[in-house]
Length: 263
Image 1: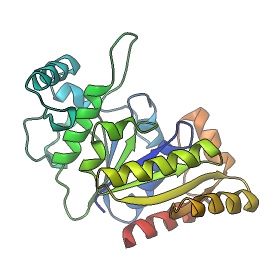
Image 2 (image 1 turned 30 degrees about the vertical axis):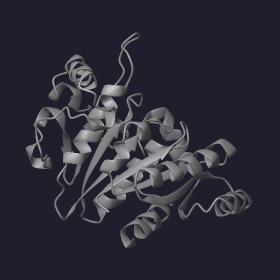
Image 3 (image 1 turned 120 degrees about the vertical axis):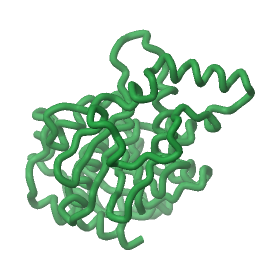
Image 4 (image 1 turned 180 degrees about the vertical axis):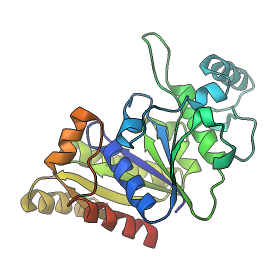
């Protein structure tokens, strides 16, 4: 699997799992491109250990107003949003992305589609269209993998972002809302012919919680990729914005990567 989307409800730890997956893949000698496709998450770059975020790809596409203009023109021609194209390149390789729009450290790199910066800025639709087009045209080498931090919820499915991806996984915390959303994500992935890889349990405090979650997932036929327990060190990272180094959670995320790479 070359392009992996990480989905989930807000607060489930989706971005944390993205960062842990990227770090584990990097440790195995894989070149990893993290794509920040969540317009409301401001701190993923810091969580990945970068000093500053890259300039948004929206600027590379000419800015939000230009993308909106292209979308209006396409709508007037009778096209659906999922049929629109806002990029000129047919293929995009990592080494071809200008330095301003990508930050790198050894084998790890990060790009960001764009953010909502001010009130009354308008909807995030241009970001969704650009995410889909960038991922569709992203041409990865044999030793490269892209991990995509999707926006919380399921709106990105309506924009067809997942049609450009190889696999979709969802992060589930111990809550009914999170479990129900995972089932919805599985159904939506199937409807757009995207592969649903499974579920990563997160913030699991004890064995009783793990067993209850596993039972609920089994009832809904949601395959389990792995379990990340509740770790105070990772919870504290929510205040500092920076993930701790390797720890007892490392084998947990390694097990998830083992399952993903075996499929």
